[in-house]
Image (tube, rainbow, N blue to C red):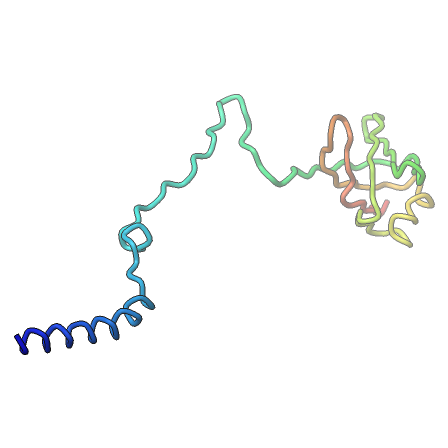
Length: 138
């Protein structure tokens, strides 16, 4: 009986000392193990129909060359007349690049009658937004 009591006491002491050490390092659960996680499929992208253009984040840039007819600084608009005598109106901003005019955007008004190329993107509705205005040499 002494042997049993001594063995039991030893077991109790070892268990009491080992329990805090085991509690500090929890075992990972099977769900949190990286090697057991299944790969998630990538989200599906909508497939455009034949009559639809694929969606893009970048606006398409166009350009038109013609004679600068007028500049309205209050509305921040400029009008050019192309070779076929049609007039085209563009909105501009302070960030619009201007090549060949003094004072950048504010210098546009002094250039009426000159040949100009307007690079633009299509805005909402019929609005065209000038991104760059270049004055061409005659």
